[in-house]
Length: 279
Image (cartoon, rainbow, N blue to C red):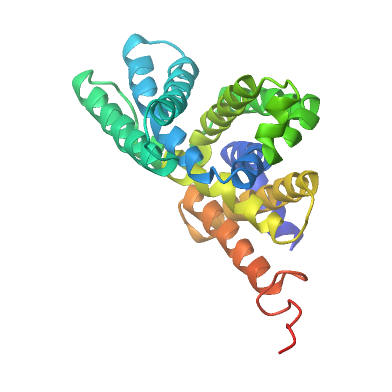
């Protein structure tokens, strides 16, 4: 058993993959918790696709992809807010429109600008190809986002469960919203190398949803989601190594399997274990 765990660590690419997988597994569920509780889980998927135009422009201009990706994600979130505020269009419709429009724009820009973007790696991740620079970038983003959540936890808690009340108390709800969107965008950027744009939403919501079935408090959901996300990432990378599976999808499938287990066996909410109601 010990040999099975230690053997992959002989290879630098596996050490890098496990490190960034651990970082992403912790960061994504913490951020995803807020999206789930606010019923905005699909917004993460929308922002993940909105970064594509910014990425293509960054590659074309030769600038850091973080700049372009962050700009694209924030622009997408602001566009959704603008459409909702200026019309009767509901949030789901605005997100669907933004999702398809920005994704189409990104694909078009990649073709027109002839950007040298690894589209397969971008969409599905390439965790086995991460470099120490990628790990450092992800670690910095993780520290910044988690530190901000720690510092502003009380304000975020109030805003998450009672936005109207938070506004009445004088909290800058628009600034908090933009902060959440910025943190979500940074989380997605940090996770793209590991699981890709298409699968990042699964890491944002999967572990957090699993924790949601097991605990009741917001801080417990964040902590439990981080533990589950880290575990899913480590197991997924090991499975990809021993069974020659694509790493990003393997991580997501492990996360989904853990959710199904919680759905069936959660002490309070499990399908098989929850208390039966009396007829």
